[in-house]
Amino acid sequence: MRTRFGQYYTFEVETSDDRFSGFTYHSVQEGARTVKSICKQRHISDARYVADLNDIRSVESKLRLGRQVRVPARATERLAFNVLAGDEGPRVTAGYGKITTVDRSERTGLSIFTGYDPAKLELPLRFENLDPSEDVFSHADGFDVERRIALLERMAGRGQFAGAAVGQPSVVRVSTTGNRDDDIVPLIPLAFQRYSDNPNGPVWWISDIDWGSDALRNHRGERIRQLATVSLTQFVAPRLGPSSASDRNKAKRKPSRGTATYDPNRPNIASGVGQTP
Image (cartoon, rainbow, N blue to C red):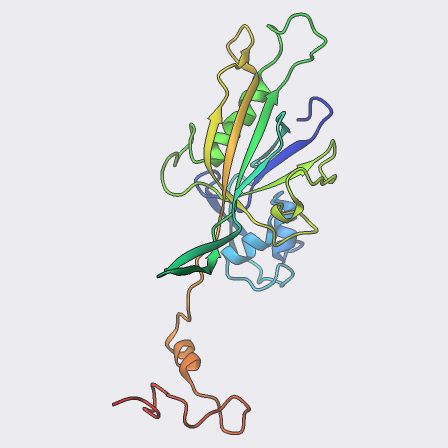
């Protein structure tokens, strides 16, 4: 819920998480024969995730009647929220080139590029539900503030839900908008946001939440203003080599004769050509 004009951060779980929703099975029926139409019928936003969950190549593929398709059980719950940006802007604290210095005796050391660290962001947030023109804040409603704070903690793996503090936290996407969800603004640099025009932008783990100590509460103890700084660490999935024996053999296979890259004298582990005894 947007309570005032300003710039907002949007946090959203990148993929469905069985700790949050669980799974059930949907029987394919006439009128909803594709993953796309099933997801539309069940109010599931990520059809590609459901297709991958069931080893289905395309969300448009026509499925056999009666087939059981695994889907999130409580898909109508959107694990996302908006929160006002804090008074300070976001900070990119890591993610650029890693340069290592190799010492050389009595000479200038060598600077060696060794890769990139995962990007890290610090985002100051302002959870707030009050009208500054009011003289008395004590009766302001803090339900929505508490709900959004609970969602943030849930995305970080903490809270009151089955699976809390067990296993890795959710992977989330973060974007910055004005007063409309589709109004993407570069408060977070655009290269660090994942949205429709940058579908390959980074996604994140929430690695820390620093809660401000001066929260403002109503007469029920609910927070109606809470400042926080969220630390995000880029999620980088491991890249594995060929998993099957045929793929591994294909990777080792030497090029056929006649190609520009073939060298008969090049050392080859499989044939022994060029190997040192």
